[in-house]
Image 1 (tube, rainbow, N blue to C red):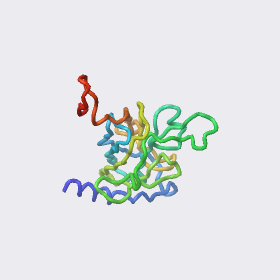
Image 2 (tube, rainbow, N blue to C red):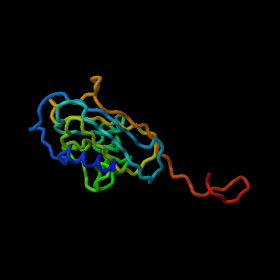
Image 3 (cartoon, one colour):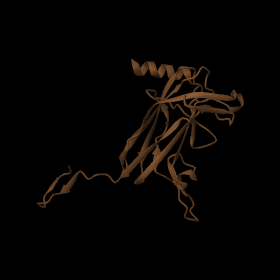
Length: 202
């Protein structure tokens, strides 16, 4: 019942990702991050869910709730992929390399079978539509790790696509955060123990 109520609220509060910066009312809107989850240790090929809970903590309807994602560092900032890096080696036909692959039809509102975040002119930004005062939405990305290493994924939350539409927390900071994740090779199911016998991996 809680999940269903949350979904109903989210769908009612959001405009299905359909928004235009031309119709946005300039101003500053209060956004609270109520949930932020992404596994800190993952294996290559493993599928994980990145979950964010976002609440309109102000008295005005947020024109367009947006989430922008990028990996830390120069390679992450210069990549056109939200979950990838830019390989600086010259002459590459495709210099952007994914660290995670986003599943088809994601992101979504939690509990919904339909896509919930519209793409924008910036491939790293997803638009979840308008959000009424006091409303909360829970959104989810389904990601598969394809490159090992230690990664820091940044996310920032906005209130619109126009430069004059800004989001801030109750303390005046820009809403967002980071996930520090280690992606490792898949642990083998069986290993050779000290006695030379094949045994299940511990």
